[in-house]
Every structure is written in structure tokens, then in C-alpha cells.
Length: 466
Image 1 (spheres, one colour):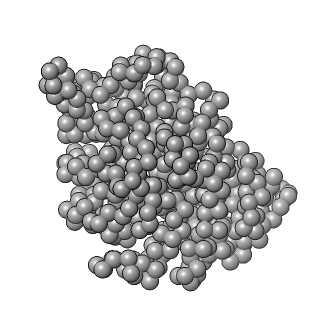
Image 2 (cartoon, helix red, strand yellow):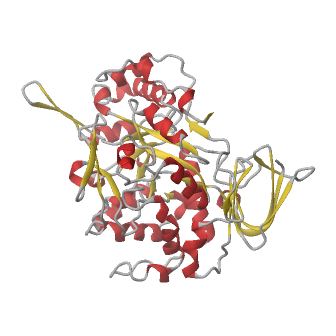
Image 3 (cartoon, helix red, strand yellow):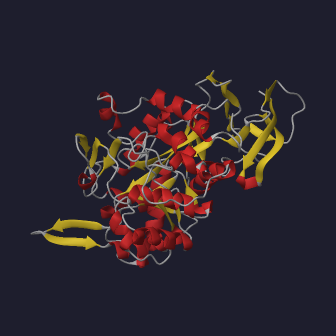
């Protein structure tokens, strides 16, 4: 379908469009300069137009969530897709997939309607413990990890535990400490692994990192317990690191954590092959400084290195995003959240577009998403919002976009979902390597043969290699 979006205000940081009025033309699922004919015209006069939202860190297909769904503690795949679409999102990234759970995770992601998907591959460093003790094995590890990422159809590499710790022979501990792991991965080739995703936990913020620009630190707000931790995150960012925020909404949410971080009632425990099981429990807001410092970070720093996240559902469900956007955009909406004073900075619509569109697309390597330039995927959200929208109206406006176009197909029209079956795509990072042998070291402790861990197309949407 050839579509013209007429007269809206465009918000696109990548192309320096900050509320300028303009038309957008769509043909063949992409944004084009102009079309010779038009099948449909959408009047967007007075409305805000952004690229489709991209959630860089949301647990929507983590192994074990079906157990929680059976207890009515989490959304169904259909509900996930529809809620995100109403908020103007077109892409979600699952942050916790292992080689052993890759087929499961992709199957779950393929069950979510409307949204394109991607995922991070979490590796167990015990499998390569002998290799990461010395950088002389760096090239071998790079090859192994790039093959594993490609075979698992992942878009990035994530380290959940930057250490190795286990007992060997009469309880003698065989360890690789964080310092050595961080130094090793700081030297990794950006051509093979453009950016290493690091699960952030409190002890990590006590470490010095030689080359923080190698890393993207996930859900940093969850673990900042003091001003010293806050300053350490700023130091990492000054050194070139990117972060996603891990903001809170002060509601009770499902918590996905280690046993020590679990709160209250425990719903289930899943062994993911790491040093500790993953616990699903009743979530609550920590009594410490983390919620305040997370929001302070969001309101204090240059936004080019920050992506929006809540570690959904751990700190806040993705359904709470519009409420949090209203806090970021209007100081009066966050006046009563804390006794201490937050920075007075207020986000513009351009800032919202940056942390929910451009920055996540850059981290994930999605060059054709997150912007409104020529050749971009025609993933477009239109909101009944402008810079003067009243503070008490922002939450509802972000919860209910007027139009959503996904890959050139109209999904939402006049606030109603009219098509929940546009083409879905699975984005992953490919490699030209044809030799799997280097990656077999990653299954040294596995009961599965390496060749049986490959994700088949039956589990994914239309595959797109980045």
C-alpha cells in the first residue's frame, strides 16, 4: 500500500527533525521520498509523529514465564503485542536467552503479534573459563562467540555473570574474577561483537573498567544503592559506555532475579545453567536509594548514551511506560515521588524519541529502524500529543496512539487496532564464518550436541541479518 502521512510534526533525532511539519510517504514497506500515486492519506495535522518504539530490555519470552502465566502473574503473548502496539511500539528485545533456551525463546517471541523481535544471547563463562584467563585466546573466543550468536539468531552478546566460580576436587575453588573477565572482554573485536551487553549488579559498580566503551550496561537503575554508585555509572558513560535506565513505577510487579534479590512470595525457580537459579517472585520497590538515583540519572545526563528501560517486569511492567514518560516530561507529575529534590529537567518529545527510538536502534544495530529517514522501515507511531499537552493528559496520550504503521501496514487507525497480523521479523547478528568448530567450546558442559542448538526458521519470524 502507498500511504501519505500529511501535516504532522516530525520528531526524529537521527535526522534532526524537532517538531517540523512535514509529509511522510510509504511504499513497499519503507519510507520513500515521494510516491507517484497514493492509496491512502492519513491526516496527522497537529499530531506528533515518531518512528515505532523499540524496547531494548523487556522480559517477554524469558524461559520460565509460561509457568508464571499459568498462575496468571504475567501477560499472554497476544496481550503483550496489543499493549505495546497501543503505546506506539513496533519492536521488543528479549534480554535473557541462552543457547539451551534459544528455540524456546524464539518460539515465544514468534507468538507475540505485531512486534518485530530480537534477543541477547547470555553465555555461561564457565564453558570458556580456561580461554578467558589470558588474552592470547582472544581471537579464538571471538570466533566462538560470533558463531554462537549467529546460530542462536541473537542480535547481541550478554554477560550475566562476569566471573567464574565453582568447586573442583575436594572443594578447592576454581575462580576467574570480575577484573580478569572485564579486562578480557574490553579487548574484544568490535567487528565481531560490536558491543558487549553487561548485566549490571551491585558488586560490578565497585570495579574499575579499563575500556567501558566496550560495554552497554543494562538496568543500571536497579542496582545504584548510593551516590558513589551513581558517580561510577557516570564515569562509565564518560568513558563511552551506554546504559539502559531500569526505572521504577512504585507498584508491585513480577520480579525476575537471583535468590538473594527475591522479595516476598516466590512463584517459581528455573535453572538456567548459571551459578544460581533464576527466581520469579512478588516484586516490590526497594527501600534504598535505587529508585531515586535511577530517575536522577534519567534527568541529569546527556541523553545520547541512555536508552529507556524498566527491566520489565522487574522494576515496572512495560504497561507502566506511559506513566513514566509523563514523569520525565513534566516535573509536576513527579513532585511527590521522593522527599529529596530531583533535577528540574523536563524531557521534550525529541528526548522521548531519542531514548525510545534512536538510541535503542543504535545499540541493537538496527540501521533501518528508530528514525524517519529515506529507506527506513515504515514503522511509524502517531500520537495526539504536542509540546503543550497538559501534564495530566500525557499518560493517556502515550497509552493510546492515534495511528500505528508497521512495515507499511496500518495496525492502528483512529485509536483502534484494525490489523494484528502484519509481517513479523526476527533481527539477528550474522557471521560469515562457516566453521562451527571454534564454538563447540561453549557446550563443554552441555548435554546437547552443539549442532542441535541451532535455531531453525520454524521458530522465528522472517529473518533479517544485521
